[in-house]
Length: 229
Image (cartoon, rainbow, N blue to C red; front, side, top):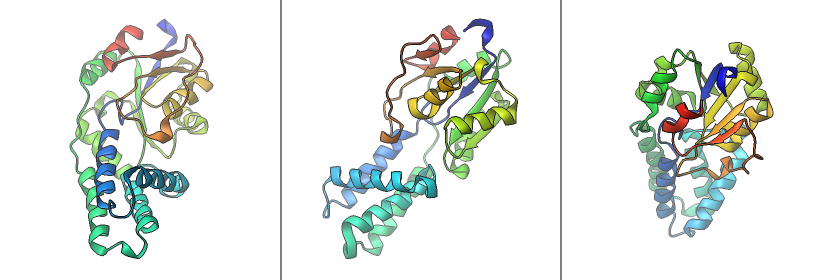
C-alpha cells in the first residue's frame, strides 16, 4: 500500500475482540430450552429467519437477538411457552451482555505501532449501549481519532462516515472479519480491504470473496497487519 494509505478503519467485534462465539453459545442454550418443541436445526433456522426479517426494526446486537429468540419461541412453542421459559430466554441474553471483553492477542501491539503513523478509526455496528460497554472495557479507545457505532455497514454508511470525518476512502483501508459488512463496501468505494476471518461467522455476514485485487488482502491474524501495511 505504501504512501497511498492515510487512514485505517477497524471493525470491533470479532476483529479486535471475541464476540460471535458467545452468540453460538447462547443459541445452544436456546436450542436446549426448546428441545421438547423442535430439533436444534429447526430452532436455528427459525431464529435466523426472525433475525433477518426484523433487522430494520431491531437492528444488530444482543437485545435484538433476545427479542428474536422470544419471537422464535412463540412460533415454535405456541401456548407451550411458559413464563419460566421466557425468563430463561431473557437471562440468556443478560449473561451474554455481561460477558467479559477478551481482546485478541496482538491487537494492542498492532494498534500501538500504527497509532501516530496513520489516522485510526473504529467503526462497529450493534446496540450502542452494549458496544460502548465493550469499547470501554477493551481499553483501546485512546488509539482512535474517531469511534462510530453505525446502524449498518453498507456503501451509504461508509460514505456518511467519510463525509463526517473528512477521510478519503481511496486512501483508506478497512480491517475486519466480515466480507459483507467490512470489506466489500469499502472495496466498492475504491478503498482497501483487509480481511481477517474469525472462527465463527454469523450466517448473515457470509459473502463470496472478491476477485483477486491489489486492494484486497486476507490475513490469518491481526499480527500480520503491520507487514501488509
